Length: 354
Image (cartoon, rainbow, N blue to C red):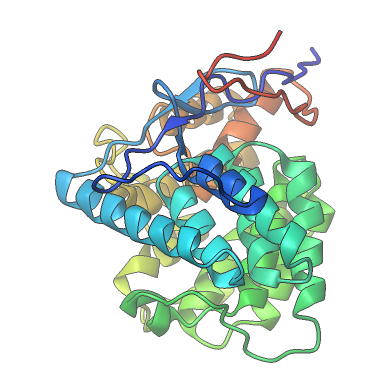
């Protein structure tokens, strides 16, 4: 069966509430008018994106404290953006914060405007590429990641222009690492494992600590296993050691590798009946649950694999890498063939143009 995901983001955009009161200017330069129009958009209704077969993806539930944090950061980045339209960082920070809040289409619009003005900025292409992946548009994502990689080619230890969290500082991933990690996923979701494995190998080249290696090996093992590089896959697992010094945030990747190696039982890895209740929980849960699905696939247990993939995609956190990979696997098993989404212009009320 061939499925054409021609429906693109139903009701994605509405209005963001402005902070305080603002008077309406009598006239604004075209650039400012357009910037305000984009900044005032926010998903209308509750559909933020759609799956590969056009099913709506809803707002991701977060604890109230996280919601308030995200809103404050979104408002701050919005104000910085509107006050600094000639500063590339304003486009990167506001686009990235929209993406973190789940506003995929708005992030794509903002980052695209930034690219028009600053066409050789790796950060803009990286975040727009991530937005395309989360919007299930894998071809355009690969194009953006190539451009992001080209923009930092020959540079060493590039970290990007956004301020990192304390955890991100400790993990210490470079722009190169993030670019090729996400590009590997984009290839994998198109069932292109030979190219996926090359990208994940490059991640290994840009790894300088156990955390980065564990994350790269997790994805690399999958690509090797599926493209017939069995011995290379075994070599990956031989590197997994429970005594490795890693941070709690990356421990799910190590645990998943140890499970695939046979050192951890399925019951010890993850509780599938306890769905995550925050993005923080979802990262580790989806990473481990997807390892179960992979092992079922490699064992030829297709029915079990489908059940596991359906369990993963029943969770609410559709922006996680392992969730997106699981969704792509599930649709492939059900006979769908990936086709690139076709853009559909949206009216301001959130309804599609006919």
